[in-house]
Length: 180
Image (cartoon, rainbow, N blue to C red; front, side, top):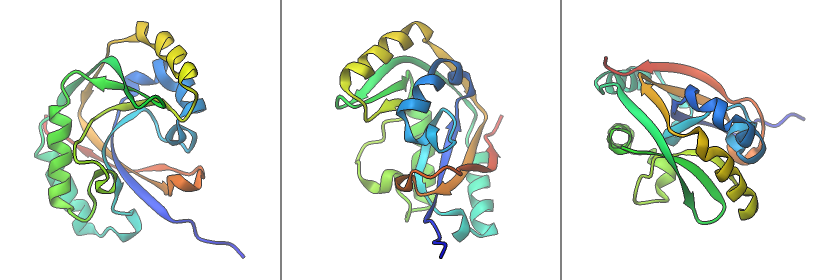
C-alpha cells in the first residue's frame, strides 16, 4: 500500500550566485539541498501547500510580490544559530523582512517558521546539524568567497514532501517577479 506524503511549500529568494561557494557544503550538511532546493533566503516557510492553493491565492501572491521593488542582496559575512547552524547573512536584511511581513499579512495562517520565532532573521543556510568543529572548518573555507552579491528580481514558490520526511522531490512551482 502506497502512502501519501505530507506536502509543504516555501517562498524563496533563490541566490544562484551563491551556488559556487556553498553547494559542496549544502549537499552534505543541509537537508533542503539534499531534497533539491537551491541556495536561497526564505521569505515564507512553511507556506500554504500548493495543493490547497487556488487561482485567487496565486493571483494575490503575484500582485503582492509585483508591488515590491526589486532589491540588492549582499552576503558579506557568516552567522550562527547556536553552534550547529552556519549561514550567510545579508548586510541589509530590511527588504527581505518587509517582504516576509507583507506575505504574512496577506496569508496570516502561514507565519514564517510556523510562528516559532518572534523575529525574522533572513539568512542563507550553509550547513546545520553537524559537529561545531566541522562547521567552523566550513566557515573558514567559505569566508574568502565573500561577499556574494545578488539582484533579487523574483520570488519562487517551491513545493515538495515535508522536509521532516527527508524525501527528494522539491520542485519549482511558480516564479513571481518583483517590480523593476
